[in-house]
Image: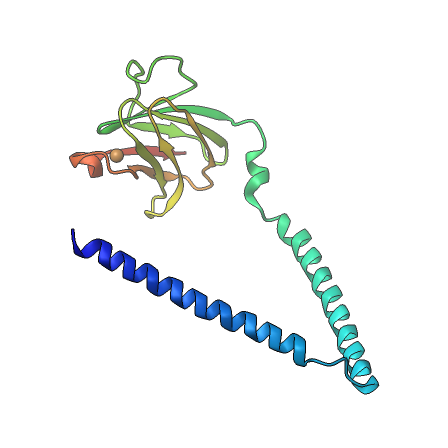
Length: 195
Ligand SMILES: [Cu+2]
């Protein structure tokens, strides 16, 4: 307990001193530049304007490139595919240590809600998962058949989190918990069969 405040103080003092020296150096450099720079001759002024002209053109070209790039790349943003109404809604309740899933929106309390750890969903249709938890925080992570994480949201008690996803490939997707929730956390596995 004795070492900690001493160490903390020395680190703070060290940082403050370093910051003060660096700040002084920067201010001194700026002041030096201000006081030593002159307006220069007409030659220099012409050179300056030439540089400004190049800079203006560079700025214009850069702006145009950014605008064109934006227009082209905006089309590849994934937002549009999530705009429409979802084809199917799925209620998901996480619990220690299982997933309960059923089609449709359920009005039952998370405890009373009944569902399965496996569900079959259509491919190429927008699916909305409404995710909650009946006990502690969990993480609803959807993994591709190859084991890559493709979508996720938190499963939290008292909250409903919505996650929309379109499965483009048929296959068996796995749901793994992404929030440590106790010893058997790693066995909290669900399956989505995409057909
Ligand atoms: Cu968990």
